[in-house]
Amino acid sequence: MTCGAVSIAILTFLASALFLSSVPKVAGCNSSLILDVCGSTRKEVNLDQRICVATLESEPGVVAAKDLVSVSIALLEAGISNATKTRSYVQKLLKQPGLKPDHKYVLQKCDRGYEHFGWSFGSALGEVKEKEYDTATYDIKIGYTDNIDECRNALSSKNVKDVAVSKGNEFIYVFGSVAFNTVDRLPSDRL
Image 1 (cartoon, rainbow, N blue to C red):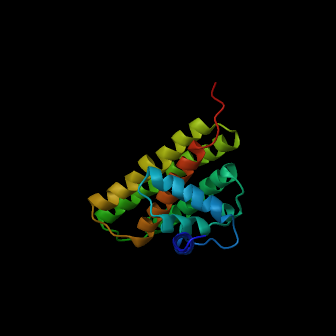
Image 2 (image 1 turned 45 degrees about the vertical axis):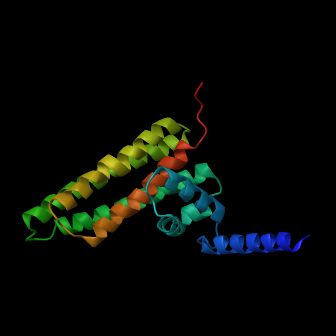
Image 3 (image 1 turned 60 degrees about the horizontal axis):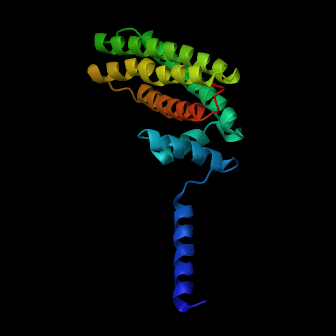
């Protein structure tokens, strides 16, 4: 091997090592699956890879998933769980006396958006389990866009700041966009 070839081999090895060290590590799970679904989704939508990986790592069902079907189911379940928590928070705030009209309006819109999100993702979960992937992608898309946009738009239009609700919306976007992309990759029985 010539000196130039050795130098190229060393540079290639160092570049590979540097690249691999910059990719987030997922401890105790199928990191390649999480990196795959986040990377595939990132190609389709504006999604930060590190936020995606960190969000998916925080969900035991996603961490335990072994294939695209099980990760799809885990994403839908995680979305429903997070939406339920955010909606409970919203409903608790709605019961507080003395809410300003703008804040009450926003919370009512978010409550309704999260309720409809739950219906959409609940339907999608059943459809994925029944291998009705085309129908599931429709329900997922409606859930994380139209339903949650009602909350996002209300927050924005009334200039109401609520960190917990905004964070809930962010989680829903990650779970929804990754679930949509992942279910869309599942084989369809179309003839």
